[in-house]
Structures are given as C-alpha cells and as structure tokens.
Image (cartoon, rainbow, N blue to C red; front, side, top):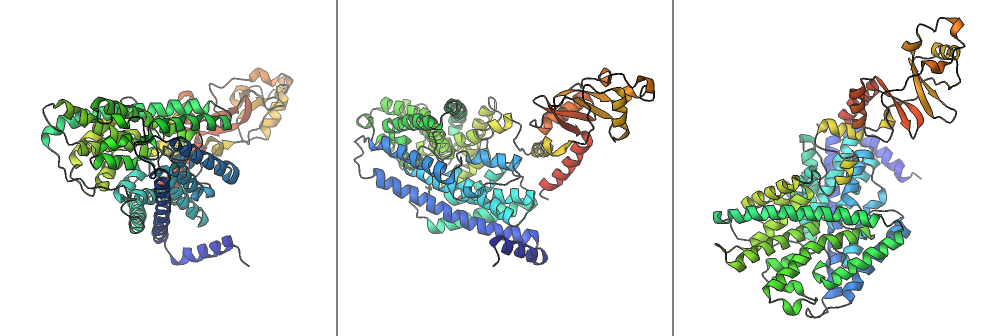
Length: 592
C-alpha cells in the first residue's frame, strides 16, 4: 500500500507534465484561502462565544474576582498544551515567520498549522490581553509552507505561499482583503511583482469570502461611519498624528523592556507564574484590558464609552469627566503591559489588536478632551477614534498602508481616507525619528537576520556563511619545518596554509609567496615553518552575517578570509564562492 508521500510524489510527476507552475500556485492559493477562512471562523467564533459565556452573566457595576482567574486559566491551559502536547514554543508568530523566511528556507514546523490556532484560541478566549491575528497568520503561513514543502516547490514559490497564507488569514479574520495583501508587502517584506500579486489577491479574497459566509455580523469587527472629512479639522488630525507617533513609541519600547525583563527570568515556571499573576491583576483592576479589545472599541463607536468602566472599581465615577479620562489614560498605558505579560508568560497572541485598541483609545481621549474645553471646533469623536486606530497601528507595525486600508475596509467605505492618510503618515514619520525598525523586526534587524525590500541586502541575509566555507586547505602544525611545508605545497592546489594545533586552535597562516624564495633551498628545510607565519588582518565567524563578511572583504582587500569559531579553525571563505552563491540565491528569490 502506497504511503501519503508516495502518492504526493506520483502526483508531482503528473503535475509537472500537465499543469504549469503558475496555474498550480493559483490553485493552491484558493485552497489556502479556504482553509484560513474556515480556521478564522472557528477561532473567532470560539473566542467570542467563550467570552460571552464567561462574563455576560454578571452585572456591569460589579467587579468580579473571576476576571482575575479566567486569564490565568487560559495561560495555564495554553502552557500545558504547548509544553506537554506540542512540546515547542510557538509564541512569537510574525517575528518567527520573518526568521523562517530569512534563515530557515521558508520551512515552518508542521505543528504550527494547528498549535498557534489552539494556543491563540485558549489564550484570548479566556481573556488574555492579546490579539488573535498573530496566531491565525502563523496558521495560514504554516499552511502555505506545508503545501510548498509537500509539493517540492522552490524557495521563491514557498515564500510566496507563506505570504498567501498570511494574507488569506488576515483577510479572513477581518474581511479586509486589500489590507491583507498590503500587509504581506509591508510586514512580511514580500515583493509585490507580477508573479506574486495574483496568488496573494486570490488567497485573501477567498479567505475573506469564506469568513464572510460563515461569520455572523456580531463576530466581525465592522461598523459604518458616514462622517466626512472637514478641512477645519486638519490641524487636529495633524496633532493626533504626532500624539499617536509618541504613543506608538511608548508601545514599542514598553514591549521591548518588559519582554527583556521577563526573559531574564530563566526558570520557565517562575516566568509563567510571575507573568500571569501580574497580567491577571491588571485585568482585574481594568477589565477593559480583558481579551483583544475590539468589543470595547465598538462600545466607543456606538456612542457609549462610559460603559468601558464595566465590572471595574471606576464604574461609579464614570460620569466624572476627569476621573473617566484618567481611567482611559491608564488603560492606554497598560494595554501593552498586559499584552506583553500575556505573551511572555506563555500565552499565544499578537500585538495587532492591542495596537488597534490603544490607537482607538488615543483618538477618543484626544477628541473628547478637545471637546470638553470647547476649543474652536467640536470634533467628531467616532472619526477620531477610527483615525487613531489606524495611526497607532501603522506606526507600531511600521506599515502605514496596511493600517490605512484596514481602517477604511472595516468601515465599509472611504469617507475618511484623507485624514487616515494624513494622520497615519504623521504618526509613522514621528516614530521613524526614534525607531528605524518595527516591533516585529527589531531583534531580527539587530542580528542581521531581517529580509528587506533592498534586493542586495535581502540576498545577503538569506546566505549563510556555513554554506560557502572551503575546507580543502592543507594545514600544518606549529612544530612543522619548512621541508614539511614544501611537501604540503606539492600536494595542494591552494597558496595559503593555516597553522593549527592538534585541538584545531588557529595560530596563523603562511602564504606561499612568503616562502617562494626558500622553498627551493633544501639546506633551509630544517628551518621552522612558523618563522614564515603571518596573522591575517581579520577573520570571520560562521555565525556572522554575510553582509559583515562582505564588509571585511572590502576592508582587508583579501581574496580569502579564515573562518574561526571560538578560536578554532573551520576553513576559508572566498570572494568567488560568495559571488557564486549570491547569483544563485538572487535567481531563487526573484519572483519574476
């Protein structure tokens, strides 16, 4: 009986003779869109109805200790699932996708087709303060990677299907296909070329239609705004953009600092306990931090923002403008704290929804304060809430176009396109003055592992030093004589001879040019070879990036550089090998 892989191999042979690569990729894009649409429906529906079951039975004017317990229960269930069933860490969704593309050849672990899905549903369903977008995007990307691997597709096609999976997933959970395609370009750094745009569009549209057919309007984060942009509001939108830029800077820096602090707790159990206790306490005091936050944004848009104090100690003071404003300001500051604690304690989730939530609070708080003082104009608080959502999201992700079209699509119209473009651009420009990288790719960029739209840098990022190391250089020991060296020269095609100890410790090297005059003088053969040794100007490590290697080639003007890892000799890397690998990789990543 044939195995599944044998059936796939047989199909691949048939496919290569009857279906073009482009047609097959389009077919897979449809399948990926359908799968992500169903996955988004199942996840979103489960989370929403579980939340309703957990909290809707209580009076809004009563704080409840269960709001402290529920999120911690979700973290514990998620941690148990990941550590004892999956036995892997799937927390860092989108950064992990970026890393897999740049350093793992697009090979995502197969279990991520379901582990991110289940982990995200458990974390968010029980009230963890994180978004569902990252888990569902990880699921979609993993589906794309799995299909590409199963059908032996090359790297550029695999990357394209990962992007199609991510686009289909995002389009499914929001029914925003345009924003989803742009997301693949801005966040996943996927180039939109003639070869890539169609699969991304098909996957995102298929996912959005599937989710739209399956999900009820109550589940979808959509609402209608008929407000139009008024020119006198222009200065206030600019001010909101600047404010949103600084809020985004605080958002990103807080995430970085808290993540670093949590990761310094080496014991995993202790880290989980500390994180979930602090996260649960924050949600208990500020129940508005419970879950993703989209339902609370709908409350603002629907014109009843005072209900954000439900189940909290602040409920009795909701009619006091300044106490309510202080409450919102604290929520604005603490959302990213609760989100980071949720994720770092072992939960599965992302920062997309928290960024949208923080932006909505920023826009509403800004416009309500302006209206309270009755300065010059009365601002439409719903419009500023929506624009604030896009501004903070675009600045946090460093993806302004994604944020603009996301906000436009969830309102089923483009009435506020001008302020969306203006405010988001100002917010993005503001944060770029301080942070050159987004919350997703900061650490990858610091390690030189980030793919960008700069084709030359992208190719160098994909290349690994270990793949271009030459190990056929003849070596000699420190005790060798000139005669021993001459014997090695006679059997070598190289003109460089590294000197290494028995434990492979690198001492130096000898260039044949330096012994050329003496190598034909037998009377000097007893002379120690080490007398001809030189120290190279520089060396490289197999752990360094190819961009650093090329920089060292330029600085030293060498043709070969020794590869030394922790003092141990590994081999040499040559300019010619690097350029050959560069050309090959360039062909692989070019989508046209």
